[in-house]
Image (cartoon, rainbow, N blue to C red; front, side):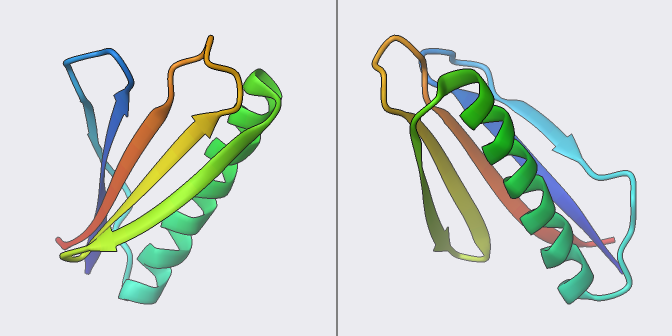
Amino acid sequence: MFKVRMESILEGKKKARRQVSTDTFRSKAEADAFVESCISKQESLCWRSWGLMVTERNEQEGKLRVHYRPACTLFASLTQTYEVISA
């Protein structure tokens, strides 16, 4: 059984928002599919609010870090870190 842990940090803020999924997944593949769906939802939200943006992915030590960077410097960028953990 697996759960997904997510940490969200907005540029300029010192405090991170941490969440753990309430759902448990039977396999790592199901948890990874959940992470991908969360990323696509966040991308669509950022596209609607910012307009142009770039999404950068970086995977290190079992954690997937996703940077959402707006094209306009008026908006703060968002960084989310996803980690699949055993429940």
